[in-house]
Image 1: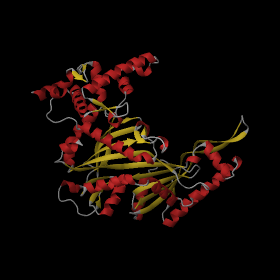
Image 2: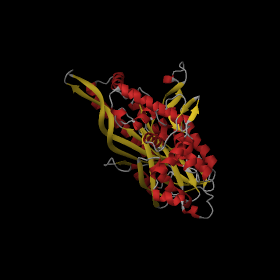
Image 3: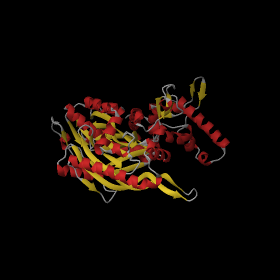
Image 4: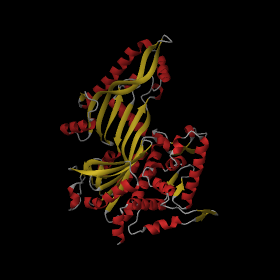
Length: 522
């Protein structure tokens, strides 16, 4: 990352890995109308008896969770308001009861769910089962696991007994560092200081080698030991998906003052150059005061102090986002959040069929593609961080941009120069500077809709084809000048280092006040 090279005297390291991750577990054969009907046939339950049978199974599940909580000696609390901050309540309970490790509490609360509904159909004059949105009691089990850290399991007490599990890679890392005896300071879900950053990074990397099915199924059965009886003859094994993942890269500055000195410039970059759709103020936490002076602690310690105001830049596209913000005063965090995996590719066998050759397929939410998902997120953070620090101090606009204003010959073909002040070329360069392109680049139709907005609404296929051709020629021009490169085996393009520098410089120049430019020139 360029930031580590440029501010080597102000930064003592960076760490990257999973932050918050939300898993979803489903019994796939119970998740559809047909699957549920087949299961009811297997256990010999008629539709007219489904209501009473389902209520009995729900009671078994809730009783099992409550009995497990009673054995662990933790409270079971019913929440009247589903919008309550459950994590905050769980942390308060842990503090009151002095729980530093182990189970904390169990909440039950009525929330929306997706479950089977049996009703009579007027046309067929028969009972029919359909999956629909309803409300039911969800059970939350909060814990501070000795290996995985703070998190929770959320179980739907009605069929199909869906499960959500939330873990945090930073809390997990804290347990790893303590076990390895690596001194550190933890503030919230980040680390302002770690004595051995390389060792911490190796520990974070081991998280991706986890056997997710075993881990997650184990957490569910620990919460509800009798789950297997409720779904017999099915086994209590879920298909696990990663509904949402956050991959964070934390650049650790030596002091708050060092980061504060450059952070306003980075925010301006996000607003002016990268055209951030969201610039948001928020409340974070200050770094521990030990970083203002004195020696670092030798012992392992977690510390949390007062709050301060900060600013966050965020770019998103298709439910995926990349953002940058100041975390606990001395940490610059770049974070990629992926909700929609279908925008990305993974190299695997189609349908996991061993007889079919490996090829690039659309990424799935299943945990089998989680390793690749983390690789993609890491590259997103790296591209965004490099784009933020793309401009070198002391470089002149003329030296940067002069090269692309002249014609160039590539593969025996001559291409015109790019005029940054020509309306179409300027719009094209502004499009390239957008921060959301750091997530997954762009395709022909993305650039086409920017250059020719009318193409998105027109029903004339010939006109669309013509504009797509013009856009393809614009992309070839950008490639000839070295501003973009093609992603292998995919019709998608990303900015080069040269492209990042030039688009950032031109965007700054376009937004600059003439009076200030004259003062600078003088």
